[in-house]
Amino acid sequence: MLELLLLSPTRTHVLGRTIGRVLREGDVLALTGDLGSGKTALVRGIATGLGVASATVSSPTFVLVHEYQGRLPLFHLDLYRLKEPTEAEAIGLSGYFTEFGVTAVEWADRFPFLLPRDHLDICLWHWSPTRRRAVLKATGPRSADLLHRIKRSWTSSRRRSRSFKSRRAVQGKVSGR
Image (cartoon, rainbow, N blue to C red; front, top):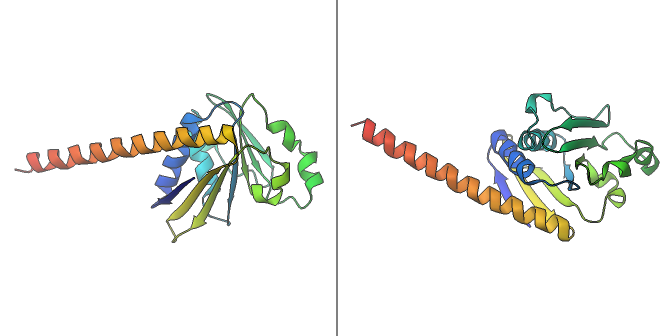
């Protein structure tokens, strides 16, 4: 499990980008959280990590599915408006769980029994108007490997970021003399 406090929408995007960079074909992400908790913002970051322009990513609430082409195909689904499992089956939900791309499902908690057993749960909560709490949990060996890759990448990117900020602070003090 990985638990994070995301201090800004930018950090939510950075987490998504980190996830996108380590995704492999066949990975499935089950996104849950209240309205406005950052699910689509996270998917924008994931798309960026896969090499898709984040400006092209929007919530598929009304169309149910968006497909994006990047390093890997990204299938972005939104189950919010669906009321019955048969509706999810009618849009071909199971067909998006393929080895030929990655799948991000918003409102996955609507029909969890239709998801593959092995997927990465990503839960987002409001912490404050701009801050979010994110919890990532693996449900099987494949998603445990994905979670491990995310943790490793997140930790190394945080180290690089702190190192860069430290160097800038030192340079600022030196040039400020």
